[in-house]
Structure formats: C-alpha cells, structure tokens
Length: 105
Image 1 (cartoon, rainbow, N blue to C red):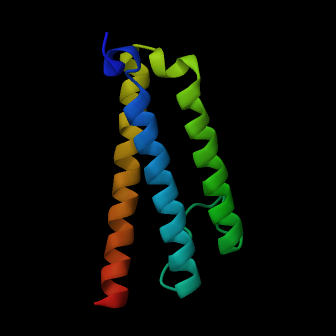
Image 2 (image 1 turned 120 degrees about the vertical axis):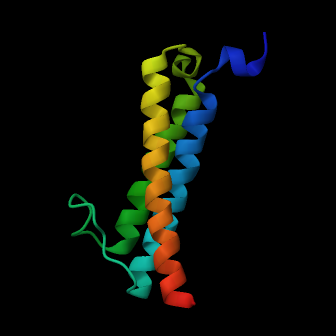
C-alpha cells in the first residue's frame, strides 16, 4: 500500500502548516512595516511578535497531528474541512501578495 493511501490527510495537514507559517511571517512583516493591520479580532490587540509566536505555536500543533493516527483517517469530512481551511489560507495569502505589491511596486 502506498504512503498516500495509508495517510490520506498528510498532505492537507502539511499544506496547512506551511500556509499558516507563511501567513504568520508575512503578517509579522506587514505589521512591522506598517503596511497592514491585523484583521483577526482575537489577535488585533497583540504586538506583532506575539502574533508571530502564536502562529508558530499553532503550526507546531498542526504539525504534531502528522505523528498521530489522524493522518490515517479516510474521512471525506476531515479531508474537505482541511481543504476548505487551505483555501481560506490561500485567500489570505493573496491579500498579503496584494499589500506587498502595493507597498514595494
């Protein structure tokens, strides 16, 4: 049995980890540059470094799922949930690309 068949949720979880880390770094950079404001009301009152560290912690927690039986679950509900989260993060990263373009071009 191939690795993909045994761990169907591994790629969506790993993608979410990478997207979350990228969002954390770009948010930190944008806040320091004064180019953006944090739109998440749960994080908006925190300093940029605290937001980045929380994103880093969240990414570490998500990465920990890669070492649990969760990656072997063959549930379409979990797969669609993770794919939806990945699409949301892709949209957020597109917003980051827009502000980077406006700031530096």
